[in-house]
Image (cartoon, rainbow, N blue to C red; front, side, top):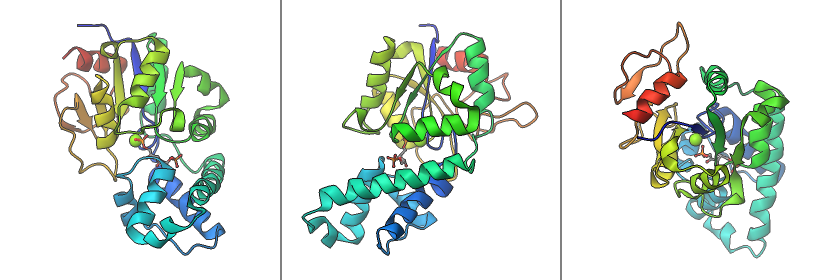
Length: 253
Ligand code: XBP
Ligand code: MG
């Protein structure tokens, strides 16, 4: 069994609950700004999350709700324009400090670095969204904690395709057996598994009911001293919150 050398983190839903009060709100502001009466309520957004990537999500929404829009001759310009506006609004929400990290995330990152584990990010979201979240929550320097940030359109096929994990592992020069993925969703689990990685899943309100068959462990959060995690699937004895030692046990199991 290979030694655990690196942790690869997803961003949306894993590092922070960014979707419901972050991305969703920013999409709606972009639509309003463009004079469109589209509104993604919390329930609809939960359905749209099946499609990763903001531009891909807008196109999927139009196919189901406003198919006539897809016939417009300028649709290939309109979608990226809407998405650019959405990113601007999302970055403003982050800068206001409205989106905190999930419990245990900062602790685990610091403990992992103290123990010499390598850190990376593999996400579907736009690169600026990642660096802005890190800067707003952990300070500018934290961007440098991550050896590789694989994000957005750097690979053409987004999760659940494994491409972003393949790209990130390639950049690190690391075999999949020496890393563990931290994810929150079925799409993320599929991407990591198809790249040969074991995954720890931390669920959230949008993903708790998903099928996590094949995950090394599913918990409701990383947990903190005094505020233990709840194990939803799998086994991990002797740990009440996720530490590097817990991750090494999972990786070796
Ligand atoms: C994240 C996503 C992204 C964000 C929006 O999935 O699906 O689309 O919702 O980001 P994952 P952009 O956590 O699996 O990476 O609008 O910047 O694409
Ligand atoms: Mg996610």
